[in-house]
Length: 362
Ligand code: CMC
Image (cartoon, rainbow, N blue to C red; front, top):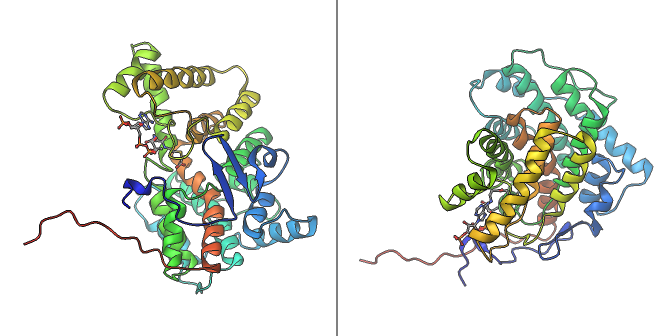
């Protein structure tokens, strides 16, 4: 059977997460995401995804300590960060650095320790590179702060604003894992050849980079700015884009045929975080009118807001540079990718689908 883009094909059985597209529900290891974002840390949920259960306080401390112990980059990686041309985009830089992490010992089978190491270094790669390109001193990681607070600290060079940190932590928890999305599939395909964890994660980063997957939040911001600057009314601007055949960034999803639950949670957080705000008002207006216009011009396709729409809005509210959007998504999704690589290795069969030849025969 041929299904373009593998639509509707089940490629794996997983215990890691359940994406219920009809009811707009997301479960990590059986827990509803809306319950997990209440008062839990990035580290707790990462533990849940890797080990299959929520940690005891000793287990959580141990994970936090291991993440902290891994907060360093090898010398050769720092050299790479300073040598790559300044115009090289951050996702390509992360992909290159993670690949270079493979100089160290990463064999088959993958381990949780490797997953923790990669999770620990991605925020360092992002913040070192960002500061190097800006001509700023790099900030040595804190050995005290939590994973998300340390990330903001290394970027900003000062202790982060508590509300910004809370918003970013929520965003990162909501994007840790999401079933068989394109990048996770890439990671599992690579792992299925018994290639090491590094290669699986490098494949996933390359897949994440594309604008139809992890690259969408920057597109959302551009979309909002275009509407803001346009002489047309918001609804006219949206309708023109759809009629021209453009995709509205932050709308539509392969699995969700209703509102993405992550978008709903981020929207609520955003309203709490910023209150009255011109950009938030614009985002809410654009959401409402886009859904209306999509219903009218693309009937029956069930196109609603996805996580990227409010991810972009929340990043704007915490003054995050758009260049950091997809890299930050990567810094959280590495947990899901590595959990899938571990699961793939547990009961492995190489992914090897077939294709139908439709070319000429001579
Ligand atoms: N704006 C306008 N039309 C759309 C959109 C959109 N955002 N998304 C889908 N459509 C239309 C599409 O043109 C097609 O229409 P037609 O039947 O006339 O050809 C129909 O809906 C079905 O589209 P599709 O491409 O077959 O749907 P898909 O399941 O392959 O695509 C998607 C899913 C997310 C790639 C797509 O909805 C899209 O490109 N959205 C915009 C980019 C975006 O926001 N990406 C972030 C996704 S969420 C993060 C993640 O999980 O990766």
